[in-house]
View: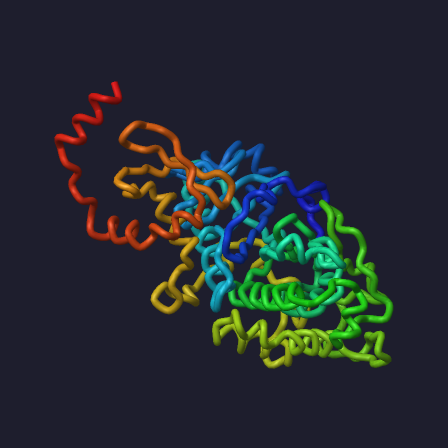
Amino acid sequence: MSQSTARNRKKSDGGDKRSASDRIALAAIGLEAEFAVVVDGEEVRPEDVFGSPRRIIRGPLMHRVGRSYHLPTGGAVYFDTGVIEVATPVIEIEKGCAARAGRSLWESILFLRDELDAWEKAKGSRVQLTGFSAHYNISFDLPAREQSNGRSVEQLALLLSYILPMPVMLLAANRESTGIGVRPRGNRIEVTADFTPSASLMIATATLIVGIVRAVMRWESFELEMLKKKGIPVLEHFRPMRHTSRNGWLARFSCFSENPFTCDVDAAMWPTRDGRVLALRHIAELTARRFWPSIHRISDPFTLRLIASVLRGRVPSLLDLDARPAEYGDIGRLCRWDNLFSERMLPRSRYERVLIRAIRGEELHMNGMWYKPTGMKGWSRVVFRRREDGTRHVFSLDRLLDHLPAWERLNSIGKPRRPKRAWNRTKAESK
């Protein structure tokens, strides 16, 4: 990742608290983006300037956990040790899932940018969001009985740290990047890289990562000897280091014989363990080709063509540019979401639709009772208040999926009128 004041002072990742117990039934992905904040030309801590996301967002916010809040887009926003972090809801893995996640993330980024524009006008200051990092999260859902014999999430993270760096670099990194990380997070794998100011390249990166991670997860073993067995090109002099925050592994520039982020990506200068000397782009292409069926299975057609074009040099990578693009310095203004995937073209995932209904506070009629959403517990459970008696109830996203069609139908045509006599009796009984 690129060097910055924020990066130097961010010693640990304390923002997203998705615990191992915060489980969902369907395999899912989620994206996160971190931004340094510059006010009137000076980098600041958002905690010091704003205090809370509530001081930025003008409308009501649904509390999620800790000091994080859900946005109307379905995503979440919070301050995390000197940066602003935006995260998507969980999105089930299926065809187009990375495009859905990218759309959700950029919608939340632009929502935040619009709110900061209003803050600027009120305070007479200029606020810039500087691209900092991006995290790509993928469910690790092997049954416990299958995690023995070298198939734990920790062993998977180490194995992926040998596979992912070159193709991820080509799609997501820039000349000032310093590393690609892989971290085991209990029930998920998290891949860390620089924030990418191109929405289409970020979606391409997510697509490639999900395709590779889900394919490797099905291997019979996660031991490093599988790299040779599966024909994965591995650099002769490469060894990942321990990640600088939390457990995990980091393919830092210093782990290579030369800095891969500043080299000519088409120069054959990288000796591999099978005796070849290859270019970075060629290694990235060979790696992606090995996993192409899995990548194809979850990709939309546009993104699949973009990945292939970048890997073959037909579309420039950010590493092909002479310098880090200026767009990194003002996310949401110099680079924006251009509605690459409309809802008509790519409908929202079911988990997204449940969360958006809950965040809007739309009442749910279930089992003869009315429930009002009031908050979230982590990423996988919605807190409701039952109207009839005021009691608190917590339902998982998976349980709410069963009621999603009726929930959507109810709020599209209007709520049916409740029997007046029954409603009055209930109020009297509750006193």
